[in-house]
Image (cartoon, rainbow, N blue to C red; front, side):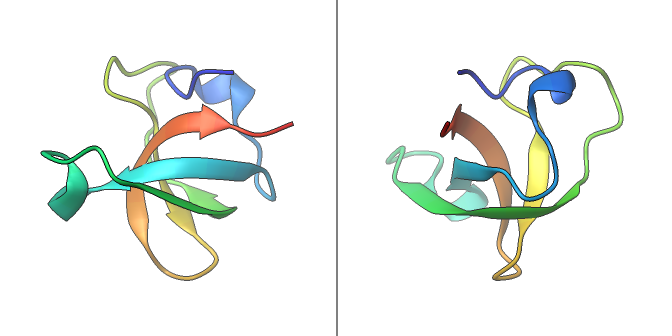
Length: 64
């Protein structure tokens, strides 16, 4: 599932995000959503979240 729609992302979801410093390389970081930071219902580059590890990035994949 893609991470461009806020409705698809729930707190506690396992996701892959791209961190700001990894945007050029596309390197993904996996973790569990602690907080959803984007207020709009969708975002073309992915919804911004904070993981339980404290890392902040945009959701690229949502794991089922």
